[in-house]
Image (cartoon, rainbow, N blue to C red; front, top):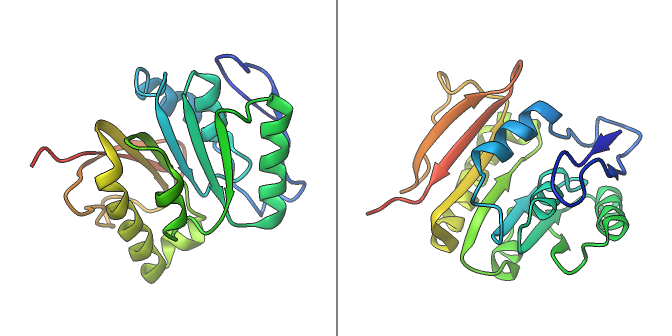
Length: 193
């Protein structure tokens, strides 16, 4: 059972699908590590959570004081669990679920600006497919103009940065963190140019 790790909703449980093949929630350790690195950016910030799943990262951000979080999930069953988790926590004012493709223009049109933190957590199968990976990188490039000057984009991937080029548009980075076997967390920032 997944729980919120800290903040207002600490220890509150999130509904998860019975079949873990559908989603791949962040481990508690990886989540805590990322949240700690984003300290100061989440409080009173705007968060965009692409491929949100059941809301693990977006709802953690809301629990830690994010002003608003737009959580985007395409799978109908998972989206239903996401809505349920938002209702259970009673954070409908801050957490806005959107049933849409994370790679479409819909999330970019719906999120308040500027965006302080963006979580991009595509299915690993999408990251290992070169064509889909290019689409993911293209969407990240599209987010760049919406990003706050001090904002961050956080990408989770199974691909080793030594064998995969993670350069994206004009964004700075990535700063690379390894979290367990086959999980890399990449932090991008806004370019000053």
